[in-house]
Length: 253
Image (cartoon, rainbow, N blue to C red; front, side, top):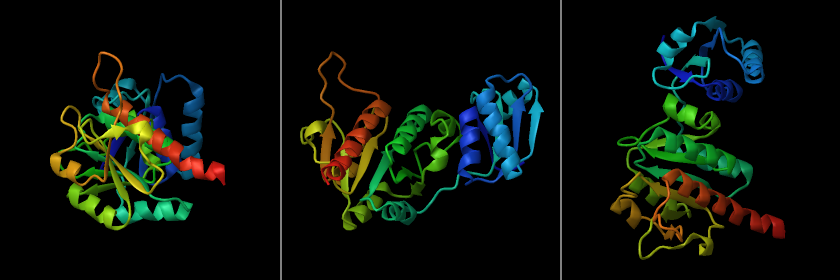
């Protein structure tokens, strides 16, 4: 069969709920427990006319490879990436200034999945990923996002720096998270504006060319002995700080 295999109960359920992928069939383990989620999956399969079957756990292990499947897998079409214009269009549809997350060369599916989960919860309009040297929306990323990526608009771009230039020309501020001398502590940063928040890869941070495109650099102040945070934790703090800043005018109105 073509496409790919989603593994994990939430990833399978959210793919069914979102309805953005073609789902060829869903397989549930013969010994799977926790009926609530499984009942949801079976009901959604019936509603959408998706073939559903039971299979031995060994068969699910083989299909899922190294992704923990929790007794549920789905054979689906590839992830439906979008153009950047579709991300900007979502903000206009919601009547909100652009709110975008860009990831510069992140390699760990767990980090990317965690960030996408937070981004979806915080109301981000879309995600920008480089086509090369960065993890895309793989089954492992979908599993780590607990299926949140199935509801997000994700664009793959050939050149992140040029994409940031295009966003700047459209009046969107580029805010990078990097502990550099020019950075300001994030609580003092003005994030109530159209923005794309940029996070760098694990260990190396943002590339210099990407840093140079930033209108504003922010850092997270550290008081303990550890001098840095995991990128998914740092990104989640900034996403919710930006979300909070964007709510203030609404509350005041």
